[in-house]
Image 1 (cartoon, rainbow, N blue to C red):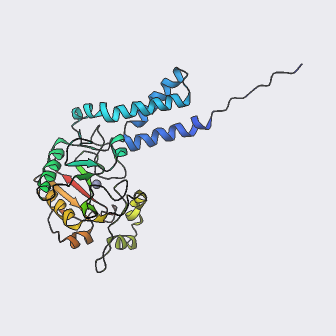
Image 2: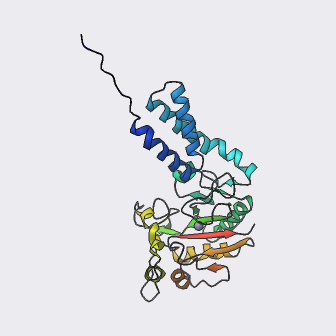
Length: 277
Ligand SMILES: [Zn+2]
């Protein structure tokens, strides 16, 4: 008579590696995603759901939280979400940014960016400001990588203005809004080159975020200059970061227009705007 074969149960690779990695990744990129993923995973195990079922439940729960629940809770933490669909002044570069809860700012910054957008509308009626990363909804110290200074909701990245077929495109040139650089023209000093030669290898690291492009959009220097000027002239403005070759090319000089330093990353793919508390 054959003896029953004893099967040793090995912890699955999924349990050992992928779950913790996904929880860390979702926490770092969305703040609450790791928590929601863990909750759905535990619930799925308790209810004996299939992997597909609890993964689907996570996607539904996360989407509901990002688009419906968190925008209602964030004001208690001193943050408000930037408009996603409504209004003709602002729009996100992509919906992943909204799903990832990266579009929360202080109410003061919210009003200031609306005011800057309204001022620009008088000259550019078709323009909608395309926003990139702001901060997460909860807390003022939770880092939003790869940014060094966005955690408190008083900083917002905005896309340059681009044109397509002679019209304002109202889109960022790369899908993320980052990493598609407006390179220094001949005769202008390339800060990227200067920083690289000084040993700051990370300076152009954001190039990887610009790999997915949205067709050929042309940098609109006039409208971008007016946008930066509108931001600089908001009473609450603390500083605007822009690559030095672009400040020179656009003819912008202002005490609040600064170079961010070689320890940071390039700012010739977007505008970094910070306001006072
Ligand atoms: Zn920034």
